[in-house]
Length: 314
Image (cartoon, rainbow, N blue to C red; front, side):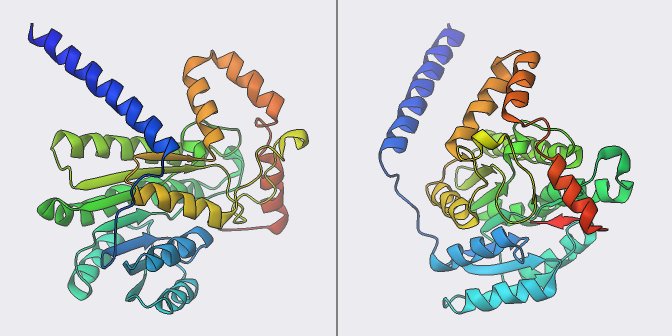
């Protein structure tokens, strides 16, 4: 009898969730105020990270900026300070766990408790698997996936103490479905998505309802990270690389609306769903039609031509 009652309650919750999502899609959701919150953004010296910093600053949030590129990070800090918020910049190597923990301790001592964590930093090797040095493969996984664990362990305890906070994971559409020749990136982003979803379930199970999470899964963003990547030419107008500012602005709307997940553009929900519903061969046929199976080859060729020894950074 208890099972039947729980089943009915689950169906009511399910129906409510679907109707609520439909209403929020049609009507503009109410956005929360983050004025005075302390927001930490990783990869803030890069294109997306800088735009995130400026958008959060416009909302009145004070900033803690982390990047391995000190000069680029200081430039972001300078632009954000012009918007009238307090900004603290730190040079951090996210591939090193102790660098994360030690800098986190400095932030708590020098600035205070972080209430919004934006895990934005990302790298890609840009080489075929068998041609790629092991250390580059490892760095992709360390920065894109492992760092999420260490960042969360460093800052979540304070959020739990106050039952207040927001954790944002900037993953990728390639964390929902894959393509060829970027095994390191796809593996790291699938890991990021899995980590984020499991963390969200844990917070809900523990009834930490004041700590929100948002998963951001954009299509390829025109930052130069995947320069040269292209699908079938007849379809490029339908799914062009995303404008960085548009990507960040859409992400900000989702964050401020406390939306659990956003795919950018919404068209990306289709391959995410069909991957689960269609047979493997059907997905392969679709990829080949769209040119998705070889879309990364021009990008890898560009990396080879530039003779890049390190990672391509977002």
